Image 1 (cartoon, rainbow, N blue to C red):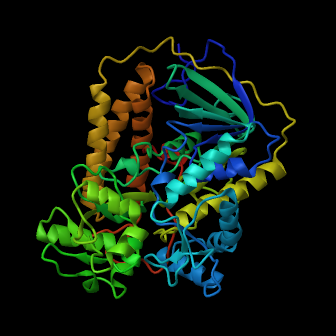
Image 2: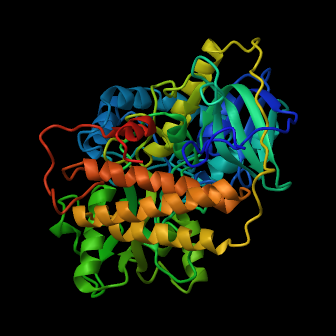
Image 3: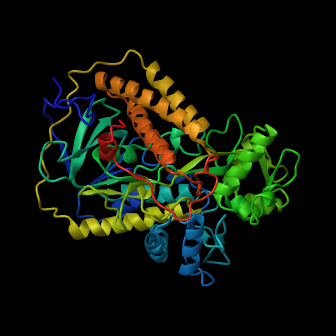
Length: 552
């Protein structure tokens, strides 16, 4: 028998066999900028586990090229940065969250500098600042065109130097463990169940405080700038545990990913446009002036829709980004990583334009949190791209994402230290039992459903949407959820199955959110509702509410 019926409540398997549970003070799921900032901001007297489902640096952080936004220059101001963020957010930002983030930007960036990140400097020791779309001034500090890599390498190095950090790699989270799901009184998060990819066993890990820092869900789309692991794990787990999830219809599509058969998910940073790059049609003519007075410096949603429109109008496979009119030395010094990668593929960006297409890039919605990273469930936090803080609204301003990781990672660390009783005994939980499930002999089901899901999300829930497309996607995702749940209920869990299970939950949330928004705003553009409503509002969903409506 099963302790919980998998067809109704799929959180846990039947628990019979008991094993030793790993117990920590703080459990951090995710090893990107948000998770490692929090880990390094906590005192070294705590026992902290940092979970990565691949290597510590396998997440999205290392792929960020542009930089980190913040108010550091005397020509800049908090009000200017706040205003730029609110404009980009299309009326849906939480101004208090925006102000909180920007007001803490200088100290957060200084903390990152103190960690040893090698940011690009000029005129001796002065930080070089660049400008990206949507920003009114230069306020982006960067490490050439590989800022994320520099940040990731530095924070991973610091983490490895901390003896109180247990760094668990090749562990993928299955679900959160909550008191409610174990039949205890008082809702709180106790920890989680994890598949150890190396041993193939499922392990329980508990803690006084659990933090979701698992990144976004852009892998739900066929074309994305993100690495393979961005399957919305934290969002899906929090959703299944009963947390509110907000504004998941706002998926940011980066306008310029390299279009080449051998260039998987390679991003061409916005800084190329910020430094004077021109977007071109196949005939070499510019077109952005037809869509926005800011031309190439318009926000990402405007640029992505413009490129999408022109590609469909012309039947073109790609458009082009050209900065070859700048001096070759300037290009090579400012964009060395992009220059080398393009050159490997036979494209000399100092002499010719780069072929580009839009691709899913950032999840603006997520698990609802406050300015301390707290979710609806006690002892459970969410930070970084996993969270919906209200900072991004209907569209993220460029380079605010890494800033959010730093500010909220540090804020959550402070709140955990101020409110957590580390002397209390962590609850005992039953361990996972797989005695009633079998190995799968039909993994083709997983690969087929994975491909189908990402294709119909791209076709029906992409840059431009219609009610008809969204209803088609809703029908398909409902069928897939049933198939995937049936597979999950009868077979041993695997890495691919767990990611697919999370992706289908996230896809379902995105589609439901998009169907509820009867307007076009920010990153959500509907042909059926081309205008924005007079008043902006959030789309907030919970799994419990949807179950009560009989929609699942």
